[in-house]
Image (tube, rainbow, N blue to C red; front, side):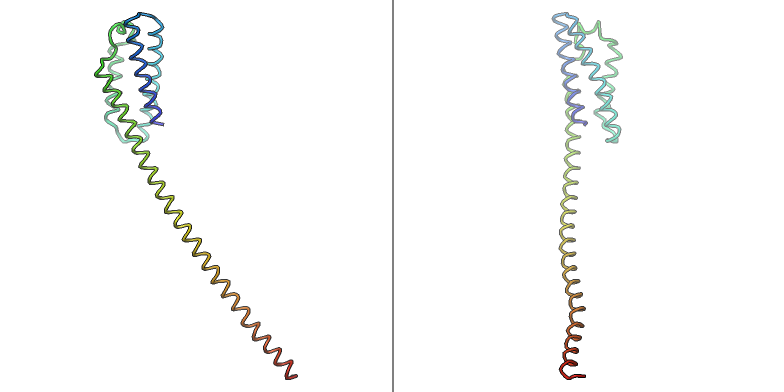
Length: 171
């Protein structure tokens, strides 16, 4: 989930940058509207990622820094209507934000991979224990059958031989 949220954040961030540059050059209202849509999507995904990171990570300082920088920029630029004629975000900040978002995704992927390896190891261990238990129960079953067989057949053989003895001697 975090990986898809970070992908959408990157997509929204790049759309915002692209549409602000188009608006700066062409001055068409449609680019500002597309910028606003991408900005709304960015904010929604930022909140969703904030919620997910609160639940899964103790604290991820780079994400907190990104969130703080974005909120500061949003407050400083207001609705951004007049400021879109300028760059809404400088290239260096854009690259830093992209790097932070990518780092969040990489950290999440590494944690996910680590957890999946752990789950795989536990599954292998459970499978091995299952095979050993199956073999042990099969061996115990065979021994049980042999014991029951001997406990029934031995008295029957003695009984049969006693009956034959009685029948031959005529008692």
